[in-house]
Length: 208
Image 1 (tube, rainbow, N blue to C red):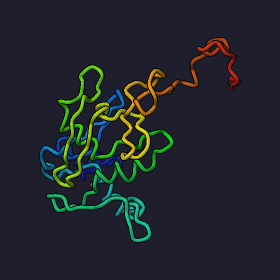
Image 2 (cartoon, rainbow, N blue to C red; image 1 turned 90 degrees about the vertical axis):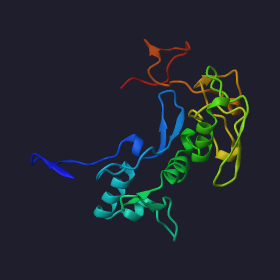
Image 3 (tube, helix red, strand yellow; image 1 turned 180 degrees about the horizontal axis):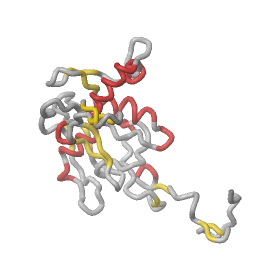
Image 4 (spheres, rainbow, N blue to C red; image 1 turned 120 degrees about the horizontal axis):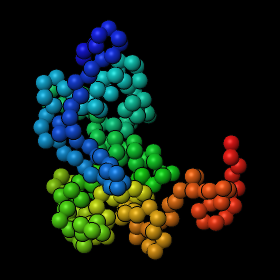
């Protein structure tokens, strides 16, 4: 850690995306699971390791890790550099997925995303939908049937992973059932002109 020019600005040795793992979301709302290519170089650490170090220093480690009643949401493991690092699998499954039910950010488990990355060849490059294919996790030995999934399980992806929602490639597509990737997500605000909505009806909202 280096303090810059006496201004209270600190430069932290954060690792690059190639030196850590976790999920990332693209602009088309699809998720990918990225695997660590190399260990962090020199004194650099992953973002989650830096956040944990700050949480400990500032006194809210238990809240950060979700410790309660003898349990905790995020497992902690020793990184190669000897420092503690929270599990990014737990961050997605036990924090993001469990805390985002209202917006349908719940079905993209680390296991499903990893299966997509390993079986990219079964997805259609235009429709993004899997034509078939099964993947067996080498650790858990659990089998994942990718048939019907859209690559990256684009948000919204409803329910638990066991529900096997395929993801929503288009936010507004009423030609398909919700469980087939359809939906009627639409903008509520900003779609009017002179008091008329884009659909032709009068707006019930009054301008502030």
